[in-house]
Amino acid sequence: MNRFNPRKLALSKWTARAPLNREKHFIVTQLLCDDEGTPLQVEMQAVLTGRSEVFDWQELRDSTRWLLGWK
Image 1 (cartoon, one colour):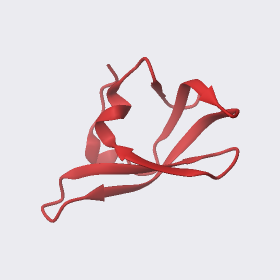
Image 2 (cartoon, rainbow, N blue to C red):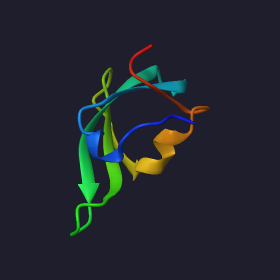
Image 3 (tube, one colour):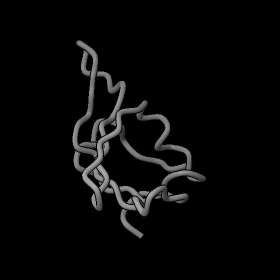
Image 4 (tube, helix red, strand yellow):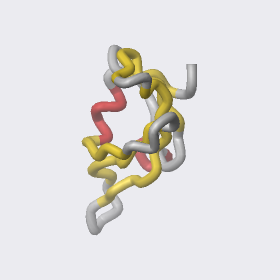
C-alpha cells in the first residue's frame, strides 16, 4: 500500500507497474475535489504520449499497480 497525503497529489509523479503501450511514467495534472475540498478523483497524464485518464485517487494506493515517483 502506497502511503501519501491525498491533498498533495497535484503534480506528483507515478510509475505504472504494468505499462500499457509503453506508457510507464505519469504525472497527476489535476486533483478533482468536491465543494468541501475533499479529493475525489485525479487526472493523470502519460509522459510519453500525453494521453490523460481520470480515476479515483484511492487507486494510487494499490502498490501492485502504482509506484510513487519515477522508477
